[in-house]
Image 1 (spheres, rainbow, N blue to C red):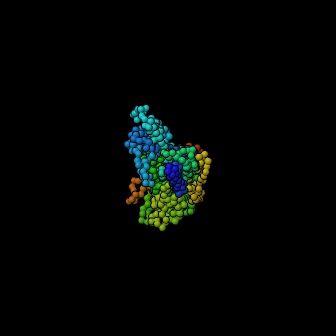
Image 2 (image 1 turned 120 degrees about the vertical axis):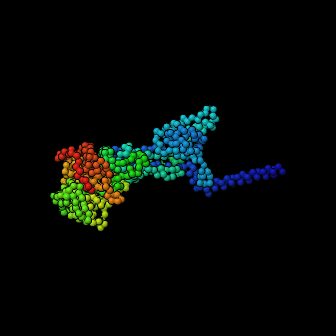
Image 3 (image 1 turned 90 degrees about the vertical axis):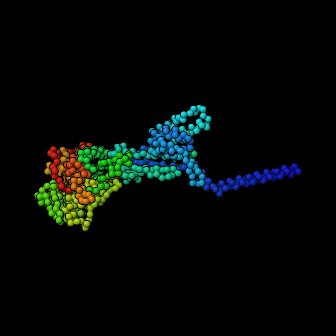
Length: 627
């Protein structure tokens, strides 16, 4: 009986063991076979992470290699609220000044919060972003502050668990994201701000974490964003419980490819010269805005392009929206008398007039199509050249009548008006050049003196540059080349001619006429240079408002180049509604002279020996009423 009982017990035990092994075997089969894919994915999600590596954004340099924009890597400071426990007040008090955050707001960020995990469970947040774009120096200060946190207790008397908690709080509760961020820096502040533009951040979510990318928002930063951005890299690796990378277990490792450097045609020294002169003109004449452009006529290279008011791209949000607008390419204006270069050069090119042809300017009045045109002085008989010298509206109108509407439109278009120049900057407008079929009866006499058309400052200086360069209209050139991190050229940009607008011989005739403008007899004696012959044209265009032309409100301008017979630079200065003298020669001539003189010295341009001495006499009121 005892043996039978023992046998039963043994069989029962064997049965139980067999059942246990059967259950274990089924469980293993379930885990390793039926649920293998699901559990493998879950394990990978818990331990494996993919880190995105942002490439370093390329620099923007001037033509001589001076740095205009660069990037430095910075930290994203984060917190694990679980490790902070109930010490939010102590941590917030220590770190708020370093993170430049309100202490109460930081306290709230450090509180642990429970949220659904998407699978029916609840989890506590263990990754909270406290501050982005923190420099290495500031992070070291934060690290030191955490190491020296004081909790007002005798820590030697605490239990081992309590001391471990404080150790983890000091060493691990505050950390940095494994992926560094970038801070875009503009070392020269507002210099060339409208050309450079500024950057912003685009945020996406990768692997449950916010991913921030630096992207261009305006200017070259926007237009060349693809080249500047580079190509992202990544790594797939194992992580610890706080999602920190375990480098020894790294699986995939693809290095990012840094962005290319963009080398501009801008010369930082010339840009500074222009901005300094514009600031002085702003102070003396209090215009709503003032712009300056310096180009090389032979290549179309833009050496400087400035607008005031301006802004600091390091902090663009601090400036009004209007100050961030690049008025050189976004704002339209009637050009006034500077547009006379179009009708006169077109008529000379077609052979319908010659420089010594005589025109009766009617002693300051000319009736046409029921309208009376006026000149600022009672001019009688003027030659074609004198019409440029004196800036006669009536003379320009009569040349326009001789040229004809179709040809006038044709030359305006060939000089680049009514179309974008193609400069690599955002927001450029094409201007307004109506087709002949939409002209009024008086358009044929208004357009030659710069009314009834709307242009950008850049269009106008490129048109003048075409005359300076033998009638060749060049595309404005702002980017010289792209280089890699070692300075090797990856892509080189070359000057591009748009078209031959007028014959070289006609361009030389126009230069002779334009030389007479910055003289005692012309409208811009204050634009004359001591050692160089200047050729140029003034403009004083009455502004157009909702109810027509506004009395007492003008765009004043002077566009000139030098040395006149071998032009190295072409310079435009435009003021919007200047006070204390609003005529183009009077307001803008001195600014042109200062820019030109300082640029000539900086570039060592050989003097023009035949240059006349500057005229010390006060400016002539020669353009009054000339639009």
